[in-house]
Figure (cartoon, rainbow, N blue to C red):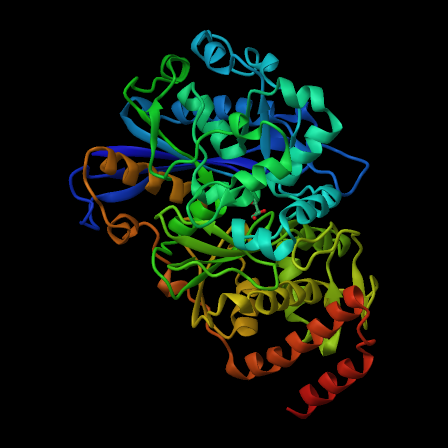
Length: 549
Ligand code: XUL
């Protein structure tokens, strides 16, 4: 048997999923299993970095940075822990990974020389401190680059042009606008920077001890890659910062073997020096594989720090409204995605405000009527990505902070209505939805998802879909490296299978009601963001209809 390691460096944690497979038989669903999974919470395990929910404190609500040293130290810690838990790392044939998307790491020259000289008896973090030209990394929650986005719009011909070129309009959290901000604020540090990595390619570079490429899955989240030919878009590079091409890693297919594991990790954690390091990708592209979406027609919703809705896309189709994204899929095709920043942290804030635990939160939801009597909350605790909201603030229509249990229902109904509304461009009316991420274990949440979307919802037994997807990618890349051509359906079979017995069915009469609720939600968004009419009359009509039904 062969074992493969998938890692997921996410906002709040670093996770590992280890799979064991019979090396010669990617077609057989037997002889394969998840051997191990483990997570390390960053705030709790590495409190010296001072992060909260994985983010460094900032007085500016639009700024969200974390520490690349924290991610590196977490890697060292997690590998040590895997070994302590009894995993024989010498058996790992290949490692791949998944990173929170869009975040960037700025490295000084001599990265490769430093990695080659590391002393394996000392912690990694003690030896790489001098490698960063920017000590902190802007992450996907940062929305402080509105001005840079506007500049890119001006130099590249406008949002529609950037969308056509890169698969997304200019977004504040995307790496290109973030690089431009760094260049403008600290041109000297920018010019001292030898390489700018994504979180994914940085982590792969550590493991391989050399600069790893960016894959088209994560590369598409930069506003710098030509979405059609999956190469750097030179016009976008030129509009972003001078000399950028030389500072970016190469773009390479997701199944690229970057090299063998760096001697430091082999000696320190007991890997075989032959273990292969495979290119890392973004967490959403990895999740696509981790929930088995390797052909069209299905969508998945991931309920994590961010909530995302995504689907496999055989042919490129961009969102004309500019809210959604097209990324590369790890299979070599495309994926569509929309991202909501006010995901699990918004749910937690409402729960905490009500002074409840999760079972109490669920009971609160169940004590209120579906549709909440037309009461709507816009849960924009933090600046929101979809729809674009730069100045945060929770908005209420027909309720306030004293509404008790109705608040619990309001946050979820708003999140689900926003997903249904803003995913219309994808052109899929799913009959079933795969649900993943931490909150997908909550069946009350899944019921609202099923009823709002009018679909059957399937949860997964392995909730860590990004790390599982990474482990599957490691296996796939190893087979490709041996000259084989495994099919993705064969790779995911038996691993990325939804829990059919745990399906949550849509209640058709409630779906009918939620279709009207989505219109009401849309009217509230229009009022809050675009000067639309006060939605009071719509709420009254909704309430009357619900009572009649
Ligand atoms: C996707 C996005 C988030 C992060 C979370 O565009 O910004 O889902 O990838 O880690």
